[in-house]
Structure formats: C-alpha cells, structure tokens
Image 1 (cartoon, rainbow, N blue to C red):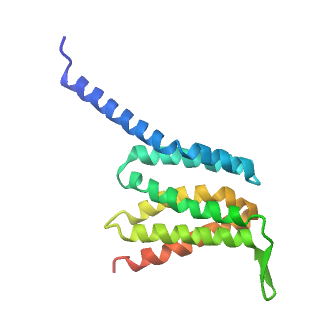
Image 2: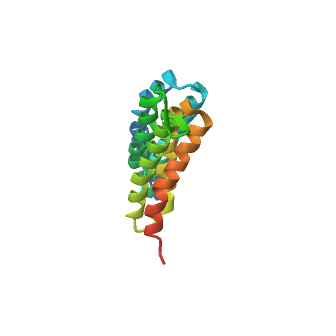
Image 3: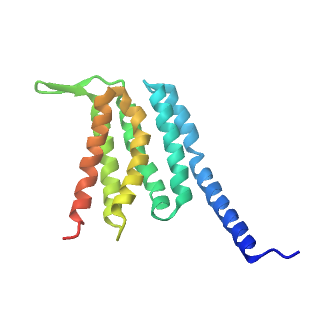
Length: 180
C-alpha cells in the first residue's frame, strides 16, 4: 500500500525536527561537566543547579529553534566564560581599596566579566542587519546564566554587578548602530 503525500510530508517533518533536536542536544552535552564543576564550588549549590539546568535547557531550545536564535548559542556560551572564570579565579582574594572605598575582588571580577560579555555580544549584535535585540537577549541570557554561579560568591551584589557590567558593555554597541 502506498503512503499518501500528507503522511510522507508528516514523517519527513518529524524526522527533520528530531534531527534538529538531536543536534541541539549534542551541542549542549559539553555543558554537563561544566555545570557539575560549578556545583562543586558554588557557594549556593541550588543557584548553580538552577542556572545550570536553565543554561542547558535554553541551549537546547535555542539550538533546536535555529535561525537567529540558534546562531546566538555559540557566542553566548563563549561570552559566558568571562563572567564564569574571572570571579572564580578571584574568589579567594582579599578586598581592593581605593582611598576610603573597598570592595571584594570577586565583585570586580563579576562586573568585569559582565562587561566583557556585554562588549563581545553587543559588538556581535550591532553587526547584524536585523534582529539585534533578539540575538542579544538570547546570547545574553546564556552568558548571564553561565556567569551567575561564580558571581554568587559576592552575593546579590555580585549578581547585580554582573547584570550592570553586561548592560554597560552591550548598550553602546547597540546604540551606535540604532537607526536614526
């Protein structure tokens, strides 16, 4: 018995979507050891588990979705390395004082990591002909989720520093290319 055209189309679509999902899952697989590593040292393991789960889920979802969303995955994950590694490296250091004002070196790492991620992704987004906001939202969410466990060393202030650094880094590139 011959299959109808509608049945063949449905089967082809299903196979296509399964292939896309499988590719997205393979792309997210290297994040599993990274998340497990962050669970081992994060001051708040629940936060690390939540961010790690969200990071893997969002990576799979964006990769499966494809188009602009899928193209945001690699830059977002790459940009997330700065806010993950800098505060982690600085977590044991003492405070830094300038005059009367002192702050944790870990906090400086959070702001610097967020700034680096924002600059990288802002520059990437500004070069796009369209969809800058969607790209920056998707890639930025990945970068911020990757960096949050390390910035938790500095508490809520560290997370706020990460967000402010990211906003400060990404805004100029987007505003410079905004249409008149």
